[in-house]
Image: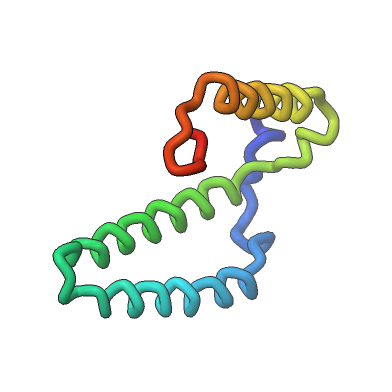
Length: 101
C-alpha cells in the first residue's frame, strides 16, 4: 500500500496547471451567474459544488502513484472493462434524438 500512495509533499503537483485552471473556473462561474434571471437560478450553486468536488478529487488523486500501472496488467484490465461498458451501451442503450445512452 505504501508504494501506491505517495506520502510526499504537494511539490509534485503541476501548480502552473492549477493556476491556469482557476481563472477558467472563475470565468465559468461568472458566466453561469449571468443566467440568474432565468428560472434555473440555482445553476451557480450547483456549479460551485461541482467545482469543489472536482478540486477535492484532483488533490486526492494527486496522492496516488500511477506508475504502478506501468508494471502490472491492471491497466489492460481497466481498458477491457471500459471497452465492455461501451459495447454494452451500444447493444443495450436507448437512442433518443440521435444519442445512445
